[in-house]
Image 1 (cartoon, rainbow, N blue to C red):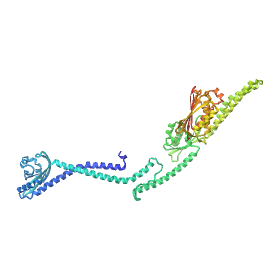
Image 2: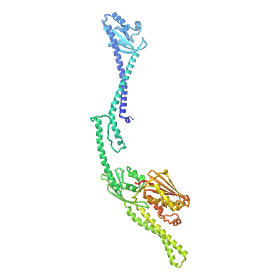
Image 3: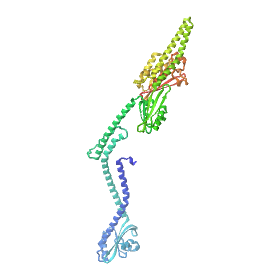
Image 4: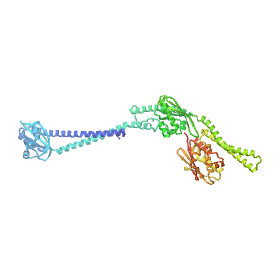
Length: 592
């Protein structure tokens, strides 16, 4: 607690503690000193009386002198002869004094032996404690002892009075000294506190720049604190210059790394992530702000993603072997990501760098061709078989009724249209999957959804659509408008197709920090629970007859999911048979 006080407060409390200790130590010494002073004073008074009566030529003249001056004595005075017998007392009758036993006058016997004595004892005459001072002297050929006495209470009062006076005077001097010290330290410490106050924001990380110190008050240039401030300002200027150079170099390096088409992750000797560029964060699927400063091991345990776990293993192997280590990995199911990983130790061996090279385009072209051939072959087989069957029928039956001919012709035409729609959908899905989102634009999502609703009502007059927007405020996001309109319209059109006429479709939009939730809910036939996990798969249809009726090939929801994932978003479906289906889109407003 004491260390948390300011410098001046610590000085104040230190002086206070020292003063208390000084008093505690000094008070007994003061009491003894005062007692000695009083004792010396009493002896001097006694000696003055002796000096007055010593010149007497005989004992009678001595007694006469004492009787004449007894009213001037401020204390009781008793004169004893050389044998310790009292011969005069100025306050008590001599007969009463002589009644007291001789051994009581111990101070007199001691004075005869040593010259003087100072004794505090109980007085048989006054029945109280007294201080007795006995001084031996020689006059006209005989030894005498003059004893004076004072009440002990009077002595104690003198001692207490002196101690109180000393305490009061000492307190006044301490207060004056502390006040003067406080003023001096305040004058001296103000510039120091100002220096600390101005530098503290930089020390606490609240400011990125070292401040320039301007001391208030009139300080001469030769003042030491003024010199200190000037020195700190000079150092601050040099530090700011160095920091600016470091920032420029760092920004230049980061700009180079950000412009690369590869992902880059740098770690220090303790496996803490020092840097990660935009591409690497996008590949990992984790915002960079959640990774920088964290241990690669802790990040792997926290996010539990195969790519970051593989990066961790490769970095550990690189650091252990102190050599370049390479590996490759493929991620995803429907849209695979093929990455080559290269980990290299830093030159100072205090960390490592891993580079993530995306070779997905090469593999995707191969896979796309395989998938397209497989999907097209699968879906085109049915209409081609139907057309071929009807063509063989027409060939085998040259004479056929006009009604049957019209029916066969309509079925052939419908299957041709189905093949045309299927081929267009496959081409669109391939284009969307390989289309880079380079032309993202800020768009009001509320207006976009309203445009989709108006377009739906133009095509399906019987549809009923309700739009609910939280706070009725525009929601601005960076999107590819045409693609997102296609996804929203497909969901709305599906809601109309799989709902009874007059059913209400509800669109809810809610902003959540840096993302938006878009929910499209219908009152249609619903989706069985077993089919929910597969509704976004290509060519997956639940009601085959209903899909054929509307010309569907099971690619609509796959297109929607591809578009949403292109925007780094997610889409989920929830449904209950007979009560309707809800599609929920989570869409970031901005991208990594």
